[in-house]
Amino acid sequence: VRGRRSCGVVEQSQPWVTTETLIGTETGTMTRGKILLLGDSITQMSFSPEGGWGARLSDRYQRRLDVINRGFSGYNTSWLLEYAATEDGRSDLFDHGPVGVVKLVTVFFGANDASHAELNGRQHVPIEVYKSNLKKIVGLVRDNIGEKVSVVLISPPPVCHDGRLRFQRERYGDKATGKLERTLELSGKYSRAAGVVAQELGLPFLDLWTTMQFDESSGEERGNWRGYLSDGLHLSPEGNEFVAEALLGLIDKQIPALSVMPCPITGNINSASTCAGLERIAPWHDEIGAKHPGDAFSKKV
Image (cartoon, rainbow, N blue to C red; front, side, top):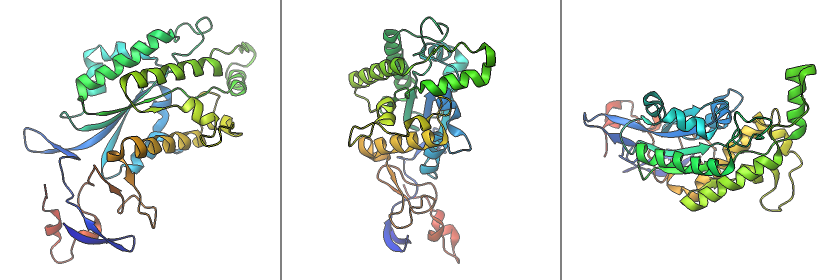
């Protein structure tokens, strides 16, 4: 361990390769740790160039963990389980390296499950089945990735009725029904159901339905919460930022070993962040000497 200068202050530099971040395989090679995102279109679209929440998560974990997106537009929990039951599906969802490589999994379903049973029976999943499906998905994660992986359940976001009706008119014109197949009330019921599952399984729970609508400190309704949704259902750039910050805040509080903190002076992540449970990959650039650069790349484990 030796000192280094970062953000204008001298800090103690930790070994840059540890088994907390890199997991050895039988061949002796190393695999970078990962975060796995499971969900529907809100997850699939989370790598959007407009600052998707998954892309923001990847930015926070640069040089520490790779973020894998396994979001499937239009899917409900039942369809995800059908896919996971196939050989290709199981491999696609869960084969990401040796046990211990995946450090965190987000399970973010409910927007489609909560569809109106009569107006959209194809995507609707009864609420008790939804709860059972969430438990099965978490079980698959444990069975295929490992018992020690951290799992976060995320509720469906609220639904803005005006936004959904506007989307109908813009997409279908005169054929728009004017009927809401997704509602704020239904998404709220499924959000609470996800919360019950999280409590029963002892998992961290990100209640977007509530936190997007209401300020946590005052309990008052946020005047701008409808702006978090681009079409009344999916996230706008502002909504993606909200979800990313909410998820990172939950990790900071409930999974502190995975909390990556920016430099307190500059706010930078790229070469000055710290994390109690995850070492960064490879030496920082200011640890590489001019005369003997190879010295900095000696692995310390």
